[in-house]
Image (cartoon, rainbow, N blue to C red):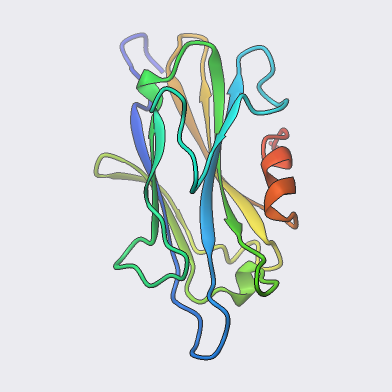
Amino acid sequence: MSGLSKGIGKVEVAVKWDPSPAGQPPTDLDLVAATYRAGDPHGDPAYVVHFDSRAPDGTIYLNRDSRDGQGFGWDEVMTLELDRLGDGYARVVVGVVIQQRPAHRTFAGVLAPGMRVREGYTVLAEDDFGGVPGATAATVAEFTRNEAGAWEFRPGVQGFEDDPEAFVHSMGRARPS
């Protein structure tokens, strides 16, 4: 990366899925973002953003929330304004968690799931969760601040078999290279 590059600025992470068949419990996928401090980039998150919260400084927020996949196009959309995030933060991890009430579900049981990460009109990553069929949650994007202070994107879907609460604590552990 050259000294003139500003890195990643503002990104959108989106998730979509089809509604459950008639007579079955609704499927609810939720986007979750966790921020990590420069002094402890793989420790406990400084804060977590999800369907019922936003970043204290307003830099990470949920634009769209669906409880059943009956949205038009992308059912859940989260915006991350990394270029405005304070210098004390070195890492942001974004994940998708499947709510486990009223029925236990893995990505194999979600109809037509998909995710997209983009900056402006440029698609940085897309996935259908096919590589993590037995998972109940997955990290889908990792953003890290380099030595020059610019944000870089690390793609990859990593599955977890955690409930939503446990996922928030495990999603930030170091990813395999």
